[in-house]
Length: 165
Image 1 (cartoon, rainbow, N blue to C red):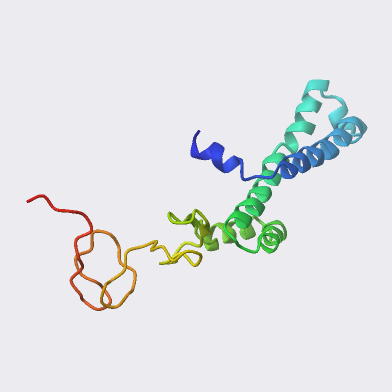
Image 2: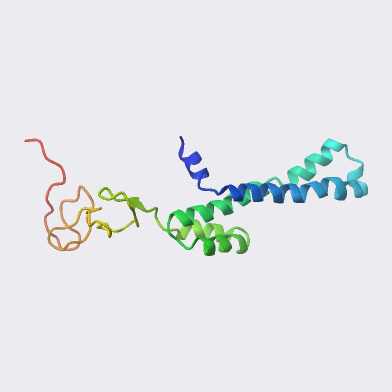
């Protein structure tokens, strides 16, 4: 399964249904009432009228799915999902959507000790105390694997992997 299909599963089914209902609710009256009533569009063939009516608002379904993605993604990241969804919808020109993608929190990760979800950036699991990231033995601040010295106190770090002799 690709990353794209995994991310599509974040979109709630209600967002897809809402997008389809809005799309059909807007395009069908346009096709049956607005276009035939206009003297300029009445000259067009029926398939051209259908293409205009149903193609005009074809981005309505993906737009609703994108708002649904913001809802589902903010929820799985432990953010204020209702607030972010409303901001994405009501701030014009998709600026709210762009703000969400810039300011969203990192995905939580699973603790190897107790398998509970823990916010990204935690050094220890708050549930079982398992170390989630290596720390400096001198100052206790997080360090990256492969670093030779602690950037905070300058302590020489022990080797993370056994070296061949």
